[in-house]
Image 1 (cartoon, rainbow, N blue to C red):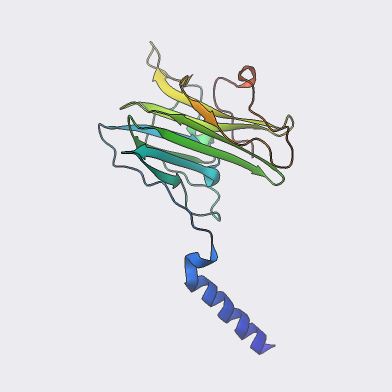
Image 2: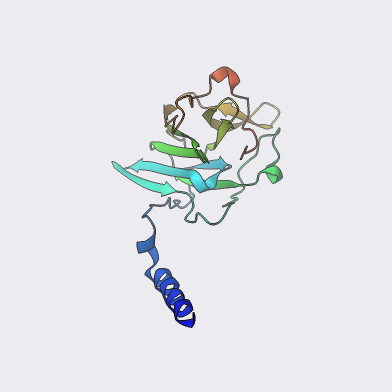
Amino acid sequence: MRYRQTALSLSLLLASISGCSQFPHNTFFTPPAAGENTASVRIVGGTEQASIEQEVNGQRTGGLVRSSEFVLTHIQDRGMPVASDQDKSSWSDYYETPVVAGQKTIIGLAYDGGNNQCSSTMSFVPKKGHDYQFGLQVDVRLRQCRGLPYELKQNAAGQWQLERISDVTWGGQYGHEDANWKKMPDRLVPPSPPVDLR
């Protein structure tokens, strides 16, 4: 029995020191330094399955916004404005980062509910000094999901509000074991991102 425990301990030790060879290789998003040539992006909810990629000088860079599948949240607060009808303290998970302005930017969000999976990819070109917010709306009962792309803008009263980004290129996979997963029609999309439904 002692031999088995020693052998098991040795196996675990070897697995731990061998590091990445035991896990799939992923690339990760590295934020640029904030400056006059950047915009800000916030992802609300589900950062364990979110990615940011940018095409800079013809090269696509970036990847996942977090490096661990074992940590449930990855809150990164950079002081972005919040829409007046939202409460930042109620968000269980969000990630704020600068991105290079004027470059094609791809936001990827995914929902994984076991046999039910859904993802949405939204491509857009951020403008210098502008603020953007992205989320994923999931309706398990109707078996639908939809990416939610917004820009944060101030109204005449100086209050921040969410405005849908109109020039978004859509992509994504809807369907894993059930072909009924699909984009949620615009008429069912609320004016602001819902609370993370997972």
